[in-house]
Amino acid sequence: MSTYDTLIQGGTLIDGRRNPRVRADVAIKDGRIAAIGLLNASDAERVLDAGGMMVAPGFVDLHTHYDSQLFWDPYCTISGLHGITSVVIGNCGYGFAPVRPGQREAAMQTLTRVEQISYESMRLTLPWTWESFPEFLDAVEATPKGINVLPYLGVNPLLNYVLGEEAAKSRPATQQENTRIANLFEEALAAGACGWSAIRCAPDCYSSVHRDHDGTSFPSDLMSKETALALARVMARRNEGFTQQMMVSNDPQDDMAHLEELAAVSGRPVIWNALVADAADPGRHRMAIAWFDSCRERGLPLYCQAVTCDTSTPFTLDIWNLWDANPGWQRALTGDVAERMRKFSDPAVRAGLRQENIVLYPLHLTTLTHTELPEYQKYEGMTVTRIAEELNVHPVDALLDISVAEELRTHWKAALLEPADSVTRELIQNPWLIPGLSDGGAHTKMMTTGRFPTEHIETYVRDYHWVTLEEMHWKLSAFPAWVAGFRNRGVIARGAPADIVVYDYDGLRALPDEIVHDLPGGDWRRYCRAEGYHYIIVNGEVTFTDGTCTGATPGRLLRHGG
Image (cartoon, rainbow, N blue to C red; front, side, top):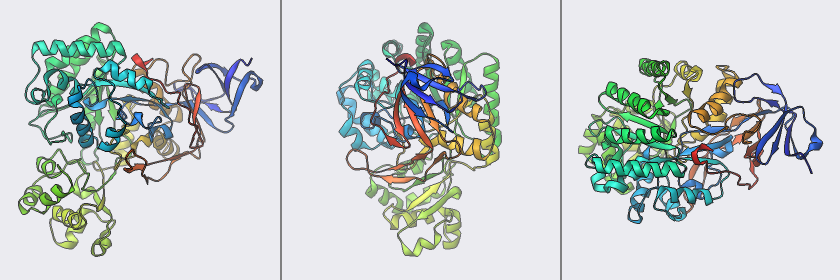
């Protein structure tokens, strides 16, 4: 009988802990790393040739929305294609539990609107064998997975469940309801939830792109500080869990004070999403970094996830919702294509839209990429503002005239904010910012940011030399795993679960986006494959070999991160 199940032989090991790389073999037994060193191939049942390759920990993604996709796609692609071996689901306060049977439709409509997840894919594949959060975890555990999953409890289904949907959108919870909310959260933690998540945007502050399917605010927007602190006290009492938070209001100082209180009361990590660097206003992200540095120096477990991947976004106005921060655009972008067409053709609506200042994905950073209309094809590659100058019209009219003439199928591409390598470099080189942010499973007709680990190694390490490979692997694996309470994951060490990537450093790259029609029901999404990953290994089993799926499903539900 062989000593080891698998031996990864001949590679250069990067252990994820910022130690210098070393030539070493890695042996696997029963899904865990059994030995590291110069090992004998005859001691293993199977030998994987890693000659000339890097051997490193699988990547950890703390911000995804694979809550429904994992029921039809075991590998949570595109993340599973790019070396991500563990994901956290249930981000931003959204999810599917606890949900009563009568609330299921609204839960799916919410994710369709705000995260642009295919309604038909949810309708066809969610088994709905649960009502409570523990029952949801049982369903996730029973589903074959090619990737490890750690689940947040989103506060929106929790608030809807306790208060009812109408009350949850119209008032804060009472003291008695807060007790019920805390009890259900404790039940979820006991069953294996990793914590709770929320985006909390004050209803009078239109700085968030998150709106429900009917254009209204979410229950989390009315969630009181008392409710949040009740959840924090549960984590303190159990000494487990963490929270993902975004707060948007007209009083940033009050937001920061509240987040500091959450961290102090719970004693558990608070992950703030998300820091975005804007070349037009670099002072904003630098002030935020200074605040996080201050929290760390005072011993408060407040961490920040930064947007460090390319977020330029292809879109068509028939599905676009990322201008929901602007009230007029949010109203105009609600409804099906026919309803949107009517609004965009209305002179009164147009007049209102011309008055609004789009901050995120602004028009001057929006480019026409493709149109089937011959009269406009000469403008492909131009920004909306340049096209408007050519046509002698307002930029809003340039965008809408072309789109309406093509029944909103015109292809545009927008940048989130003013991009610049200089400000991105500040985020990449900061040792305490968690890189990303992928939003994996969401906005699948617009984004392929689940590619970010490949992009970071390819661009920021190999091409730009901004950080060492050892530092990048720590930021992509060990650091986020540690913050999120993953037990022994994110590193290559004896006894750790064998989540490993074996790749060609010089040949690693993210391939150009493509369109695939693989969603249940036949819908399409953008897809981004990778080159250079020789093996992707999850819990000791190979899931992809040179980009080809093996069919193995060794992924696990990581209750309590373990």
